[in-house]
Image 1 (cartoon, rainbow, N blue to C red):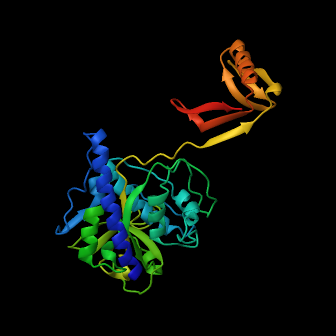
Image 2 (spheres, rainbow, N blue to C red; image 1 turned 180 degrees about the vertical axis):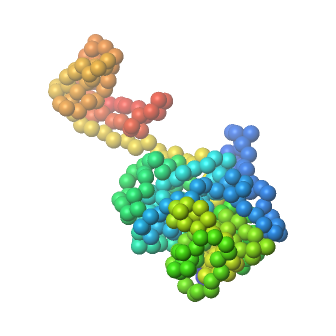
Image 3 (cartoon, rainbow, N blue to C red; image 1 turned 135 degrees about the horizontal axis):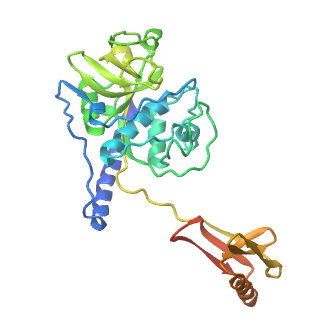
Length: 335
């Protein structure tokens, strides 16, 4: 409880930083607008982010205990859709394999984990698309992929481990879909339709709350057991049933472009006496043994470059921002 309360202060600081960042961004982009959650009020008798087009499709975690990733990614993707008006399919595998690389972020994997480990990873490292690192239902290994999608902040609903129905509704309206805990008993696993109502203590699964209906006295949850479970992957579950809503986490998606890392610089030593020219396709390459250093459109330009290198006594070539893309990166020589 003390850890959750402490996080509330940190989360408030992040939100203040985002306000300042947005104000700064608008100076150079006056037309920039932040899309706020709309159409939701905690006083409504019923609400569903799915009918607003802000919930991504049901996923399948398969035989890996990665619900803690799927539930929290569902919240993040919903927030991204709300705040950036863009539907994403981000990489659960990236988070599953890499979240443990952050200090004090736990050792989550197919054996389980906590929602805040995912949220913290999205805040610090971001993530990429499903296509960039497809899901394998294994712990996998952490590899480098493009990670342009960040959370700006995250927090525990009401700074507590078991928020009230009113607090969960307010958080749903303020942040979008929530990542929450529940006890997935045998009866829960066998659910097909209707309103699930069981009161068994414990906590062993993570799902996403996407809405509510007071006439049913129930939450609408999105699970990660494929569309073959429940109501095409969804369930109505009574308020308070099996600890639903426990450990609830909200995640706010970043709305301004993430700061780009400084290009990496790497330098290679070479012997100018060993430089040769090789014809490859439409290009002429300056080679140091088997290593390609420069590329030119003509053989004359390649030979001229070698002469210049030898004339100035250059022995090192440095690359900045590899792999290069149009308009980015550079090459220079050192003696």
